[in-house]
Image (cartoon, rainbow, N blue to C red):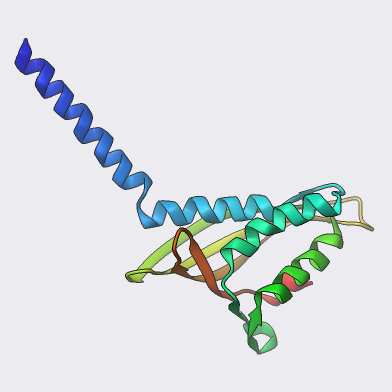
Length: 165
């Protein structure tokens, strides 16, 4: 009986530690962090300036001082400052009554320690201030991440021009 209890305890400890390694693995942390980012960027109807500021603060914490933005459709590639990106997001979000971002597919590569490249399909549902019907579209997005002190920071984005309109 005592052996069964010891074996059962070891099995529970082994399964618990395996789950912890999985849960805190870089891939899973990135998935959760990008899921939180999608949720924060979303918008349900009108929101006050304070609500918007609180939401975009989470985005600001995920951005380094500078982030490289590339839009191949427009032959655009430039390193943008954190404040400029936040201003753009404020402007973009004000054009829509409803914004909902989710990731339909996400492939995460870890080429070296502290670096990640994410290939994702961004599903964006939006309803403009002028239109009654919402549109749902998917876009291929590539994100370059570097591990910071406590979070993965977004160092580069490659996205289609349709996401900027």
